[in-house]
Image (tube, rainbow, N blue to C red; front, side, top):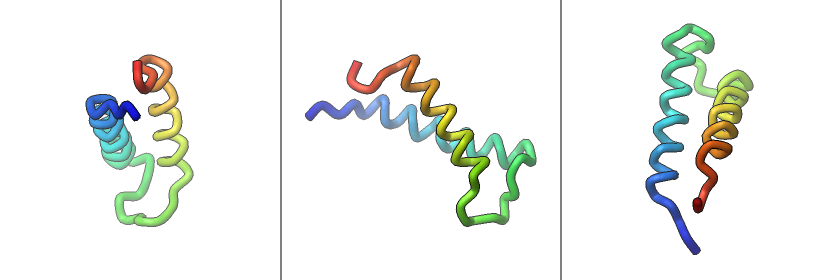
Length: 58
């Protein structure tokens, strides 16, 4: 099984940057620690676009 560590590291940075950016912009409450559909949707879109640009294993 091929595992691309660089792809995983970039994905992790994008996820953390998405959460940080949404909190910094005030789109989500920084105090809330439960499930948030806004964060889920934003991460889904970011990861979808990232994997369109750079598919896993390519």
